[in-house]
Length: 238
Image (cartoon, rainbow, N blue to C red; front, side, top):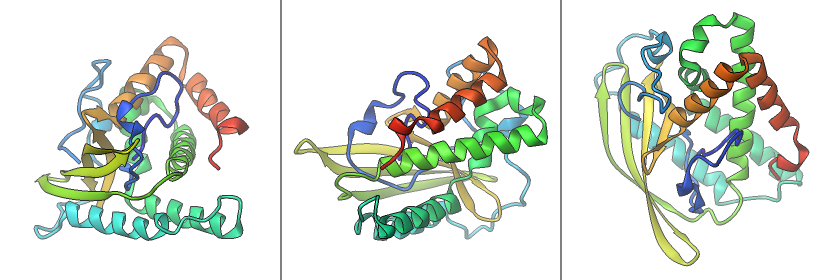
């Protein structure tokens, strides 16, 4: 799960206290939900044209497959400082990057501000956001990887879909259940662009936070903060 990647402000999801680890999404629903700042209607909310998904395509099956691939590595954790640990991190980045659409997340999170960026600014922002998401994700891989996921249902509407699931794990000796909704978009395959955990949307949190900084300062100030977060040695994943 991905929570508070930037941590530019207060923590964004109390549900992150649970020790379970799942495929992000990263990082499901139909259209992106309105942000807490009330900003909607941007062209950033529309998925990139990629043709209609095949009738027999299943976002739930694709997500489950990605989670299972990730599980193989989580259940064989290696020390982060070891060559094996570094190789494991690279493989995890590869798996997460294969189903989490960083470009779509960045575009929707910036909303109306996306349209005013140059191609180079967009590329720089997406790459910086990707680095922050990956680092946050790897940090959350520490601890007990024991958990089970139940996939309840999927809902498809055109090029968008929602996959509803429940994570079963333990925290401080007590059983914990977290409801997780993955928001996905079809781009020749189903990709995750948002994850809603116990009604806490990663995308909405980012959008509200990014919008606040850009409106008060500037896009350049936001990017500077993000890069500063990456440069913070005390905040790096082990």
